[in-house]
Amino acid sequence: MEYRKTLQELTLLDRFLFAETMEKPENMQAVLEIILGRDLVLKYLPQAEKEQRISSRFRFVKLDVWAQDEEGAVYDTEVQARNTGNLPKRSRYYQALIDSKMLEPGVDNFNDLGPVFIIMIMPFDLFGEKKYRYTFAMQCEEVPGVKLDDGAVRIFLNTRGQDGEDITPELKELLYLIEHTNDRERVFQSEQVRRISESVRTIQNNEEVGVRYMQAWEEILMERREAREETLKEVQHLIDEAEQKQNEAEKKQNEAEQETDRIKREARKLMDEAHDRELDVFLNLLNRGFSVEEAKAITNSREDIVKEALTRQ
Image 1 (cartoon, rainbow, N blue to C red):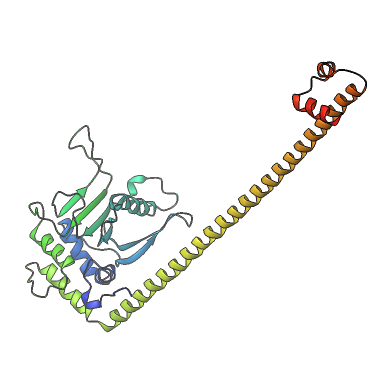
Image 2: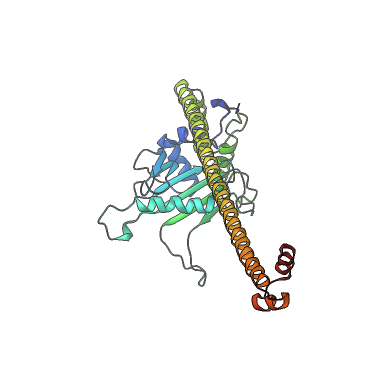
């Protein structure tokens, strides 16, 4: 049976605890301020597992925590415990889905698009440069320093970075807290990080949150069982389809073999009939007084026909 962490064992790299913590606007605002290095005010309550899709025909995603500030900037903050090998492309897809929802129907001024920040936090170095933070915003390759300025920013945070020259001590503390959430010995210098840590402890000791965590885990197990059953059905369908095709192929092969046998029998019959006719002609010539050589010259018969005719005469 798969091991389930207790609520107290979870860290902020676990989606459930991260979502519970960041749904509190003061925590989400503090995290964004520390990451971005500036003050901001959230316009709406943060939303955990916000579903994004263009239409029912295309793949949907659930954003870990979605937030928007009073200036219209949208923030999608994700935690990723393991490297799935597709995070850069996934961040691109998330950005595209968010962009597609930012303009109302009929709006033709694309300058109304607000800034979008995709933030991914992970306990591994995605780019191998030992940085805590990797920030990407489009700029011109041919002219260094010329930025596209389209308002789209993607930030990848590595909790296990080693080169901390480009980040604040506060961000470094936040990243430590995200991975080592249950380190009760660590004393944080940042007041904001300290408040987030205290909020996490309160959440982990909340009975209602514990019940929600149990329910969420049961839902995950149910989804996995349903997915497994669906997969088994699909596999069985493929097996049945393959067996049907194999049976059809065997049937066609048997029919082809039977047809081949029929053709062979017909051919043998025709050959036997031709043989008998040629033999009758040769014998008839001999009986009418023609010599063997004369009969051979007339019929152009094979040696076996000649020998059989002489035997029967």
